[in-house]
Image (cartoon, rainbow, N blue to C red; front, top):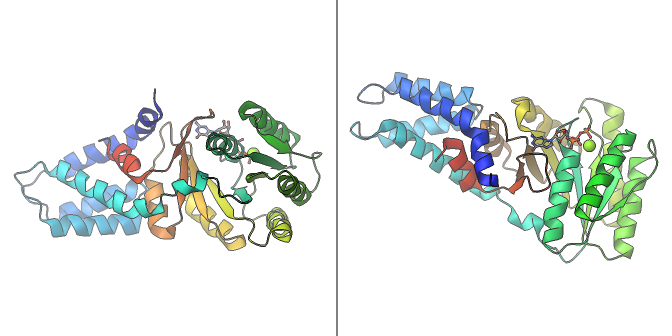
Length: 304
Ligand SMILES: Nc1nc2c(ncn2[C@@H]2O[C@H](COP(=O)(O)OP(=O)(O)OP(=O)(O)O)[C@@H](O)[C@H]2O)c(=O)[nH]1
Ligand SMILES: [Mg+2]
């Protein structure tokens, strides 16, 4: 199965819910206020957020769809256009280019969302694009975390700098950046321990990694990417808020969009934060990251 098919499959359930929901709602000749209310409610239930749902309602209402057309198709077209126009400005393919100077990327997120796996996947894309990559094993919290990142480094054949479990995460990041400077590498990708955004000491540690990076390069970290798990539902909104407060985010990656995810939350995030969406995780293997493309996302979302 190609990555796009996989992507589409991930959305099958939510898209079918929307389509069958629309078929149930749109039965009358003309789309009246009650029908519009029901469409809006269906969209909110699909996680696309209050703002986007209300925008879409307004567009449908203003469009005055000809009752002789297949109205469900027409509404789906509106949905698709809306997704593309909202999300296309958030594409950022250039993220994976060689910047011709050292680029330091901090990967953050709560426990188990897929940070380490995502580092393996983006490391591979960077490498395929001709970058020299080094991983920083700054999740020193668990010994297994260091081993996990090391396996990824071996698999895709990039360097890794690590230290003993329990050592200072910021000092590992410092060593890695220093190494990258000495060896003229292109991309430093820093893994961090999964942390609850309300644990102050862990969040202080996270802040310290960024401060240490700044000591070597005052523009660092150049990228601060929050990894979000699509199965977390509305919680992701809170996660973006909390992490953004500590070190301003420069982009998002959403994982676990394979399976039965409700991808609508990504539209809600796009509308609310307008943060670049770097990629979408569609599985556990090295090639299971799709560089974000709004049109592909929209097509998968409505199963076109
Ligand atoms: N299906 C699926 N599983 C994924 C995806 N990304 C990661 N996983 C799985 O999710 C689990 C957690 O992934 P990790 O990469 O260890 O997550 P993490 O955020 O580094 O976890 P901590 O370091 O413990 O906070 C693993 O079993 C991964 O294989 C994805 O896109 N799809
Ligand atoms: Mg990890």
